[in-house]
Picture 1: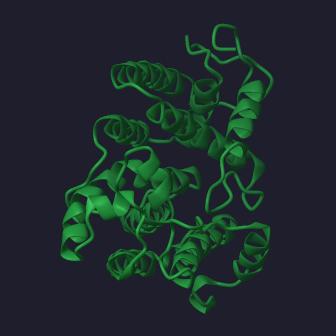
Picture 2: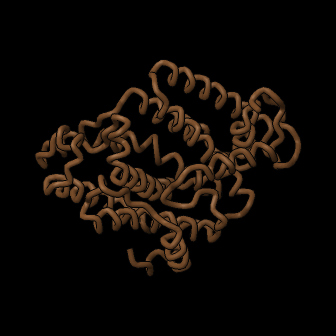
Picture 3: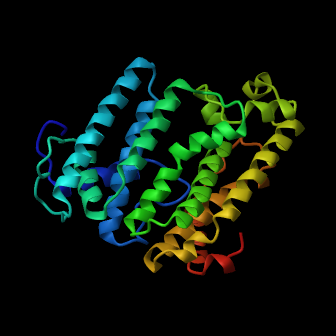
Length: 306
């Protein structure tokens, strides 16, 4: 599929398929947003998911080479996007671009139509490259720096998709996206450990007298509970810092952002309800959770209990 001309319609269909393969704490390309933007969300998500899958592959050099190729495709994609803006999705083939990969065909169309910023995609690639070379974080500051590239660009792209480019909204979005990334780290402590990745800050582990040996043995003792409670408190603070965002965006985006916020905070609640033992059972959202949160998301976030 990467060597033959790809219609934009087929490219978006491939992106939607890639998006459906992966579980997340909140619905991606949700039915809560208009169809044209839903397809663009799927393209953004497919770009991130492909790169994330590469980051999880074995070997260092091979993965970095793939990211170099991905970066070159991104550059070409945006050259075409700038040249052909604005575009309209349809059954035609990708215009005036040598890019044939379906993700980039769709991405180029979305970037041109919605004026998406290339820098956000470049930052995502930086984070995935870091996943290849870094598997420990010495402190919370270094973890937050990683989230700046791994999580925050997605929120900014969503805002741009709906015509928002205000620095204050970007800051609120960054708080929520970083919190979502951290919530994912805390629910996936065991999964990440199986890949030799540790996102718990090493200085915090030392502070609460929880060693790497304890972590490898998956000891959910009092020290681990105190460590996790400390990290969750930080994460709650970030969620609260960004809580005003849904009510400050366009009406058609509000419910999606409320649902996103509720999904992330519900994961924190599930971790707390499990007394922080994420080793025995991974906290996650089920169908009933999504149904309940969907109903909650109909109300303004200020009136929704966290």
